[in-house]
Every structure is written in structure tokens, then in C-alpha cells.
Image (cartoon, rainbow, N blue to C red; front, side, top):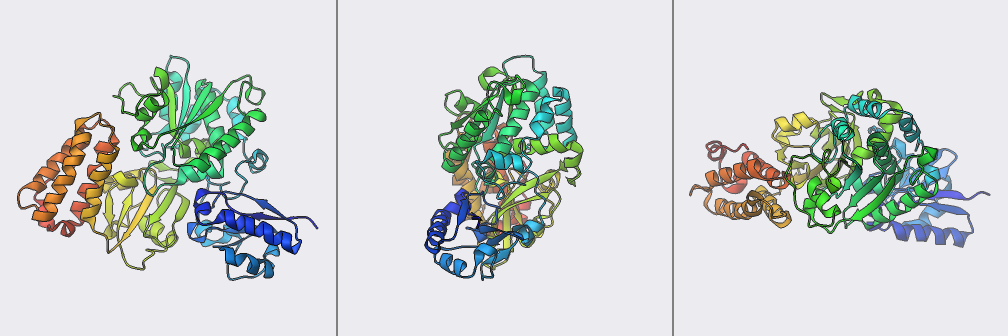
Length: 523
């Protein structure tokens, strides 16, 4: 009798919930019962409330069980789970679970399906099909496909990827570089980590295509220090790609050279800003650079550099393989393709979903997230990380779309959605925005360095005096200065959560809507 394949996630989220102990317990129980199993470690499919989610290969496909605890292992064997037997934890075929069935996965198509450090598994599931095609295309044709797709940077700014690549391609200086910004520091965001831990080869393939496009020979992944599992997975994948000729001096026999090195940051949030990241990569303190010049013209070591985040680069292989037109069929308006969204905070079903642009925040939170974990009404959601605006429940009909969110004075950012119920104190959330900025500022510009500290003081005065001493107007002026005079988005976007909390939840500051309306609260 052949061994039964059993999948237990190696994703950091699943490991934090006991996946490693579950894997060992399954191996011990199988040995005790003298049944043959092959343990396979996949990434997480993103259904965090069901982790650790164990899957078993059967004649009817993979069958999932979860969330599995140590005390469940013996009962699962008793129920015949190795052949898909019935058990209270049986979830059926993963792709038929509503949370997954309603998604459209492009970038995350293999995450949770394959063994992330098996190059054979990656190739068997469609990997490294785009790279040979890219090698047969002209650089201009690669850029044209990217522009046709409508892909915009998934790191926060939403800048068109094709324009960035075209700028680097046309820059005359050499050598050129490809840099992946994997310094995912926003609260409530984990899509980069999941991708790197669940399908690292797709990131390497995307970076190699970028190198082919602009003629780069060296690439760097700037990884946040808090991701040791991603580091291990990336290093294993890079070694396998070198051994098989997908990286190195002669990429799949093309005569082209491209190498990738992982550089680990030191925990500074500001290094998620691309120019501060470049400073850190060059061995200096992570501080924001003045722009222009843009990194695509003068980036790493002063040379033309493509900088994209993990999700942007990992989406490129699908676009090159299937064509830009295939990708742009999804989405709405100028927000084309799919977007990985991360549900966190007070939500019943936290996790990651990949859907076309255009769903409303309410659909995402209620249909996928199941509402709040507390069962209380949703009061606010913060979209776009700690620098994103707070939107009230009345705005949950807003589409997940760069322009739709901008019209509500918000941002999409990296696609993080943090949910709050009706017990949240929004004055404390507004104060935290200033506190976060003060802690993470690089200190180079005065509006960010000083304004954030003064902002905490002003918020405290407002909550004590209900703004009767003129501090509300002072806060508006301070936010205007930070938004328009800061060197980068850290100081420039900090007013978003502050002012949105004041506009939509004035009562938490001891104010009325009229108090706020009398003072300009736009930046």
C-alpha cells in the first residue's frame, strides 16, 4: 500500500497555532498504527481561523480538516481521516470551502497547494513557464505586456508598474538592479510573508523577468527582520534555483546572468519607504532620500533600479505567461486585476483573500470575514495600514478600488483591513497614529520628527478641553504642515487616520460634528 500524503502548513501563522506539534503527532500516530504516510509541508491557504488546517490526499482529491489540535489527532485516525473519513473537523475539499470558492486567485494560486521549497512542485503547478517566454521577448514587449495588464504597485502607492519598468529600461546608466521591497511593516498586513513562505519561486521568477527586461545582473530582497521563516524559505529556494540553473551565470541556458541575495533589515519601519531601504541596502542608516531623482533613474548605488514589492513582482509571471489582457479583464476602472486583501482585527474569520478589485468593504468584512469576532456591530475599519484612514460603518459600501477609497479621503495601501467593533475609542486610535509616527520617524525632516510628538500633545489637550481653547484649529494646521511638507509618506500620511477619526467620530474627542465642521479638516 502506498503512503498517504498528509499536508500540514509550515506557514508562520499556522506554526504559531501549533502546526509543528501537529505534524509530529501525526507522524507518531501513523508509526504507532503502522500506516504509511508522507508528511508534506505546504503554505497556509489563508483561512487563519481554521489553522492548523490539515489536508489528506484521497481518491476524491485533497480533503481538509481543521482547526486541528493535538488532542484531535488520535480521533482523526480513528475516524479514518487518511481516506477522507467523517469527523466534526472535516471541511471537505479545500477549494469548495466558501471562503476559498468565492476568491479568484492569480498571485496566490499555488500558495497552500504546493510544497514551497520544492522546485519540482512549483514547475509541476505551472511555474517557470513565463521566464522562457520573457527571454524570447524584447524588453519593450515585456514592458508593453505589463502596461497592458494595468498592474499597479501593491506596496501602497499604486503606481503603474509598467511605467516604473519602462523608466528603468530607458535610463542609460549601467549596471542596473532589481530590488524587492519585502519590508512588510504595516499592522494587519501579512500577504508578503504568506507569499514568500508559501510560493517563493514565483517571486524569484518575477524578479528574473524584471532583470531580463532591463538587463540587470543582480537582485536583492530586502526582508524585514521579524520574518525568520520567510528568510529560511527564500534561502532554500534560491539555492535550489541556482542548482537547477534558474538563477546564476547562465539562466536556463540563455547566456544571461542574474543572482538574488536576501538582505535582512534591522526592524526600522521607515525602511519600507523605498529610498530609506536603498540607504540601508548600501550600508547606511535608513533615512529618506530627496526625490528626484527617482530610483528607476538613480537608485541602488546611484544606478537605475526597479523597486517593487513582493506581491507586484509575484504577479508578473502570470501576466507574462497569459498576457496583459488576461489580467486586466478583472477589476474596475483604473484598478485592474486582483488584489490580496488581509482581514485582521476584530473579525470572526481573519485571513487572506485574493479577489478582483470592486468588491465593497462590507462584502469583504461580512461575506468573507463573518463580521466581528465579538459579535458586536462594526463601528470602524482602517484600510491601508497604520497610516490609513478610519472609515465608519456607514461607508462600508465603498469599493475596494484605489480611486473609490481616495474619494473618501482614504488609501488602499498594501490591502490590509483592520476591523473595530462599537467598543473602540477612536480618540485613542488617533493618538496612536501620532505615537506610531514619532516612534518610527527617521528624523530627517522636521514636520515628521517634531510634528508627530506635538500631535500627541494636541490630541491630549483636545480630549481634555473638547477643543474649546483653539487646539482643534491648531491640530488642523499641524496636520496640513505634516501632509504637505514631510519628505515621505510616513509623515505625509499620518494626518489621514487622525483627521478621519475626528471627522467621523467627533464624540470620542468630546466634540460635536459642528465643532469639527467649523475647522478645515482636509489635507
